[in-house]
Length: 274
Ligand SMILES: [Fe+2]
Image (tube, rainbow, N blue to C red; front, side, top):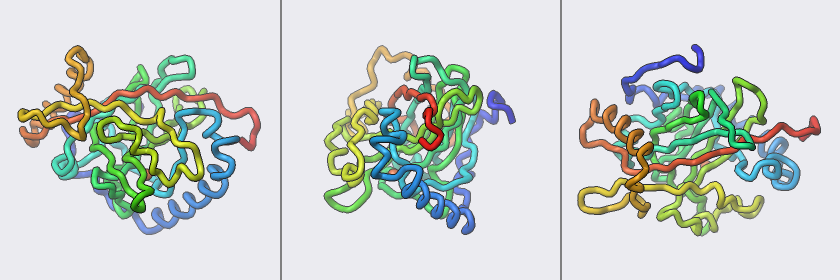
């Protein structure tokens, strides 16, 4: 299947809780341990590894699982959440533009995404809220998902975040980037201050997205996000497209919030061991 192939324009809500086999779970756990100890060694990551080379880089963390399914609907559009998850937490539409360090689009980059639901729960037995997707020729990808929730020990919670890697599989000019995007209530980066990861790497407030909301008829704003700007024609058009698709399954289900963000790739390291 080529990166420009149109997969389908009908949302397949029932098919994205695929089970993760035991061998894949065990392999992923061993792999994560290797990443933690070696390729993202916490003592080196900020000073010498990707944390130094790219201000939008982030550590991978322990919850990545290999082999996530393709979530593309069509070029530049991906559906990550299933209908039950969207109904439970509310559809959140995030649009990402992947660029070079000079701001040129990175076409057909492959994202491998994983996240907690809005209650802060990861699935480690299924591919719920996990999947791969591809940017379009302009480096853009719209992802329909749910806002990620906080999790972690009391007093040291991590702010809600999306995890993903970005691979420049078409031009192969840029280093594969591991990153996280934070979604904080009211767009207040203070939520990132309790993150237990702050003990091993500096906080990454630049990775907090500026979310907007579509206020409900009684004026309620999802997670206290400001209303979508009236002149944001592009976001409105994207929301209309997704709402039409959602209405095929549930006419009461509409996009409640979202964000747009640009992520810059960076050149590979010059030294072979970095
Ligand atoms: Fe996480």
